View 1 (cartoon, rainbow, N blue to C red):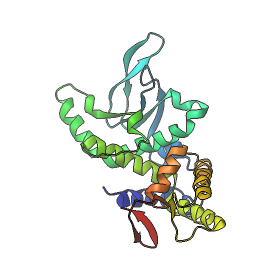
View 2 (view 1 turned 180 degrees about the vertical axis):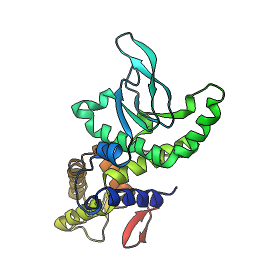
View 3 (view 1 turned 30 degrees about the horizontal axis):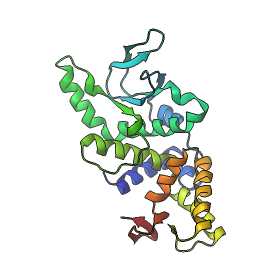
View 4 (view 1 turned 90 degrees about the vertical axis):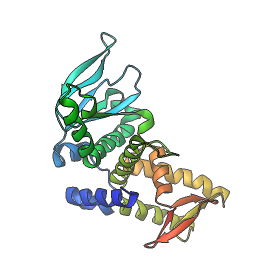
Length: 249
């Protein structure tokens, strides 16, 4: 799926869940959306001994690996189809925003990649294997800047990140807020080219932090969203004008 297709799907889901979220700068209750709207189950576990695994999406009833901190060993628990498991570390204050993005990321796996995993899970269950009935997402899989997309896993994680970003920072609402801020500081043309004005370069950092607070996402997620929507770009990047908005190619 292309970024545009993923954006469209996220917008459709938001409009059906709560149409105000498409255009208003409100915080999306992503756990409520997952549990009530999509009828998924939320669970929290220690997924690894070092916090390297942030989330898991379970596509079919199966045992899944978690970490038993009391006994310092791996163990298996039974999880039902449609269960999102988030690492306990993301319940801590400084990690809650990353946890919200991780929930959106796992929701994306459910919506976009379920046929792939369920087909493989059915085949493997005949052999008594369960490895493909769930996907585990590590730190490098979620919210990362990806320079290369080579394998199927690379593409799936990129799609899941793109969907989570579009879900938590709805395009119309996000652009509306940014354009309002641009007008206040005299930025014209709908796009700021980073590196053209030292004071405005510093101001874009403030803007990123404001957007992160408005949508309750990490600073990195807000910065990537600004870049992916072509609202801020570097001098050496080419842009095309698409439907009245700048887009980085």
